[in-house]
Length: 264
Image (cartoon, rainbow, N blue to C red; front, side):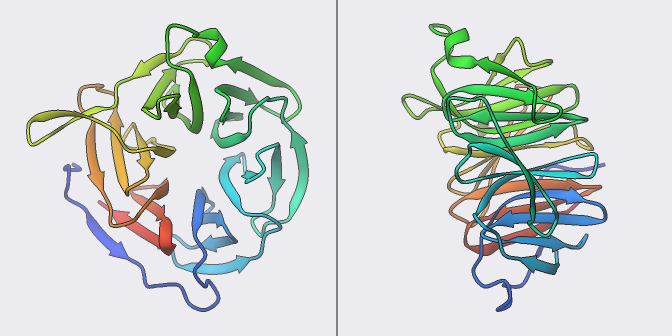
């Protein structure tokens, strides 16, 4: 049984000259290892050790895998990119959104995306999109949002971002039509607290059936199915960008070339 806080950390060595000081901002489990992307794109083995690295035309900020097909977003955030594990762009499909695409996630054959204008999108082919203008739909009920993170799994989808007052918020849905706000509170030393760190990304871990909200300041908020059981942890980095489960292990990516493999 997994016990909270009982982790064995494997801190990988600093990157060699081939990796330089590149920061990886996104990753997916791919076959028997990982694909990580940011300033460059790289293949990592199951121990998160680099096997290949390739240049990119532009930095990538989000990755998703659908049935062995790799999709990505670049910093422009205007199109869904179909890419190879070596970073070659096979196709570029514009999304019918007002805002900039900030993050994508896969759930089965469905791709989810969010924008900084508060839009939540889903597609199966990159051609036909279903779009919810969250801010218009929930005007006066939920705060106006700029979304930056999305994850899906376990029969639900979660999105996160900040409101106009920069307060972090997250919302969940079973099918993408009706959304409920997810509390971001947690207890520290028995004292109730609310998350204040700016969200950067979301991850879903099917084995543990929980979401993880990664933030600036190296904060990670664990969001299990019990909404009263959230917990906060912190890593020694300025920002956490991605958490990717692979069987029992989890890959963590952060600023400053931070790459860590967690083992239970």
